[in-house]
Amino acid sequence: MVSTVGSTTKVKPNENVESTTPDMSLAQAIHRMAVIVDGTLEDPAAVRLSPSLPETVMSQIVEVENPSLYRQLKETLLHSTSYTHAASLIDEVELTAMEASLQKTYEQLEAKVDEAKENAGDMEVLAARFEVARFAAKSLGKDMAYAAYDKLLALPKLSSGKIIDAVMECARVASFYSDTKKNGELVDKAVKLSNEAGGDWDKRNRLKVYSALNKLLIRDLKGAASLLVDCIATFSCNEFCSYTDFVIYAILTNILYLPRTELKSKIVDGPEILSIINDIPVVYKLVSALYECDYRTYLHTIVELQPILIADRFLQPHSGYILRELHVLGYKQFLESYKSVTLESMAMSFGVGTTFLDLQLSRFIAAGRLTAKIDKFGGVVETTRPDLKNSQYRDTIQKGDLLLNRIQKLARVVDL
Image 1: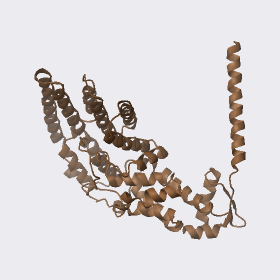
Image 2 (image 1 turned 90 degrees about the horizontal axis):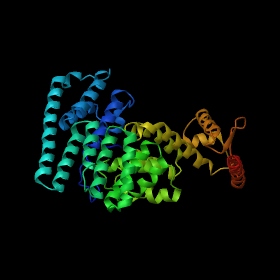
Image 3 (image 1 turned 90 degrees about the vertical axis):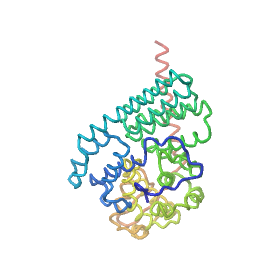
Image 4 (image 1 turned 30 degrees about the horizontal axis):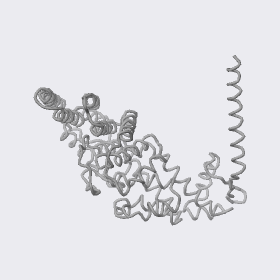
């Protein structure tokens, strides 16, 4: 289903060996800890998460020595009525001592930068600056990390490749701390630099994943889908997410937009996806059931999908939207095969009651998501095929009226 802390991650060939700071798997684990502690994820076992995940996460934060993050999460745990291991948390004295040690290390790293400036060349200064920035990203918090990368990017004579590397690393810092706006700005900057400088294939490929995950965060699922499906066979972005999580994102976005034939070739029968179906049984069952028109399994699998969405930091903010779109997709595909169908027959196909189905269909029809109408007295759902020519005619008239209004406004300005 979803990868867990400490689980084995499938790695694609030619794995990127660049910096993996900050640890994005820790960011995912922190999210999962939060939804367990606040009760949003009612059954952690449904997504193979251990009840001891909070203790594991807090131990990992101690290992990477990030006292500010530890202090923030400690407050969350102490205010939770469901957390019963408060005594195991380290106290403020230890956190203060850790901060003092980190400050000393930071000063030593800055001293190495000054020494490189005096006694070495530009490459040594750059390497020392990267070391400071990565240390800040790992242990000193968001603001210190941003400042460290700003100093790195301010160095003279930086190659375009190193600039892109630094911007991508800073984008991961923004993503780690859920700074969506900053992450989007940095990813856009890196993509622009790569396009202008003709960045190497690996960077362009990894940037597709960065862009796709940023689009996921801002709910541009269609934009994310096309980028994700392009990278299924060439994924090399293990520093941002596991391959298992990446495939989940690719399937859940593309199921909503890919034509049936492409869904079959790229997703259902995709060799890379088939190689990990044991790790994603629910998600693969969902797409297979839709393709096979097994609507009963499809609708029931949507219920199983909910905890997977909640347990993922990229999908959880849009879980309600995704579940709704999956319902619409299933009903729309079913109704396309009929001019009319009884409510009872459709309910049997989906394995639900007629009252539940009537309520859902009426809501989607009223919202304009389904082109159908319900004959409640006769118990029949009638599909209404959209008239493409009339629709195009109405659009032309509306756009023509808008154009005339703008011309009239322009004419008045010119007369003045």
